[in-house]
Image 1 (cartoon, rainbow, N blue to C red):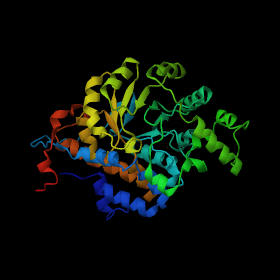
Image 2: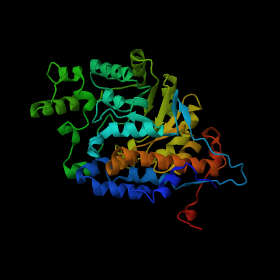
Image 3: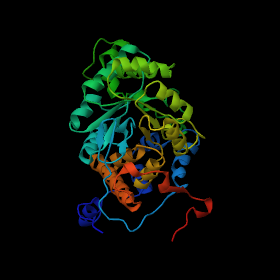
Image 4: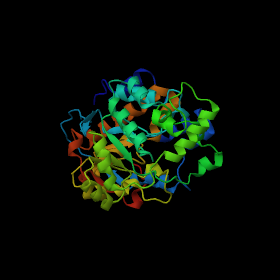
Length: 397
């Protein structure tokens, strides 16, 4: 049993880590380090947050089957999805307004992802303009989340900018066309976009300022400009009527792969495949949009079955550990994404905190991959998991 070169070895050699290793410990550390309204914006979900709880609880209904007497050769957790290589099948989800966690925001996360070999999926509502994020980690792998604006010129501008900056896939945000009923935000009275937080991609765009009544991108924001930016963004952020057949228009704007995020139904997965998408993401927006929703993990197997291997299927919503990622891959995902965990890591340690989260996930995932009898992710299947009866929950040896 060799730890040589592992993240565990580094931690032991250093006599420990300044950052927590458990999901709950990381969340509590972020809670302590962040202003209450900022933490509640990131951690909160819709309504009574039953969907948030369901997402995490769903992983507890599956158990991994352990295999013995194997050759012991190191497992390789790397994957390539839509031509994008990654050191492990765990990506940074497009979680927005990262400046609420740390001043260096998405740029710090980009540097962390580059160092670990993870893919960053940049949110539409970033604190840092997409070009600056790319410059912060020029050798990193990046996809761009596209919230389709209700203005074609702005929509095309965002796509053209992402392509020019080296993003290698477009992720269409399909699960946020109506604002969720987010009780924590309502209770605090804090809406970040009202203060121009998270509008980095917009306030750096000439077309956006034309819509706001200004002729060019300003060097700085006056209170009048902040108010105009917030009003304009709220008015044009998403196109109210967006249909699967509209993806043909997007295809005419870009040669990049197109992935649709927010798919939870097999019939919609089938329709989107027929419309020629290059990939799907099973997600319920981390429980931030619809309360009392079905756990995203429960939606994964039927969606994967409907897709039938025609396009990659990715997954997010509720992934907290390396074994969570392994369960999702066994149930049909090609890779997973994490949202709140990387923001918590950012809050407690900036770039180093995000690196800690990613290295911990990679280490746990790689070990679990080997312990379940696999050398690579490609051989994972439903044979590696079984449903855990309710009587077995919480049992310990």
